[in-house]
Length: 158
Image (cartoon, rainbow, N blue to C red; front, side, top):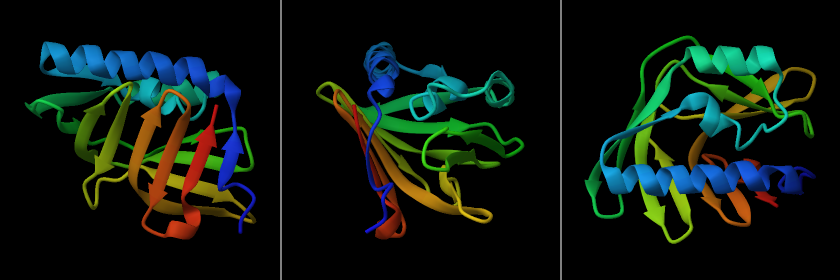
């Protein structure tokens, strides 16, 4: 078993709680936007200013409700962006295209990516090894990241 599959990052808690609230409020209002930089900050609350600037340049995730508990989301096409998590050699890569479905749950939300438009979780070994993500679930006490290859799944507890 790999050492980075179950981690404790208490500094993620306030960022995750804020994003959960924004997702719930936005969904209740109808179509809404969340800057991709704010979404990625759940994983990288200590990201460098230059990485945050590159993420800001990618724009907003646009969420469109189509059901009482969820809908679709997209990010306009753009350049790929890397964001170092400053933990265990982990990196998030925002691809050229990003989209899928979101589901609002009690005090939580889940993002499920469309094949070909997935966020990527990466690990620096000798070089950067990246895997496409299936879903990300953000709750009050953890973030659960699912990969196409189960061995790369990640659970982060606050």
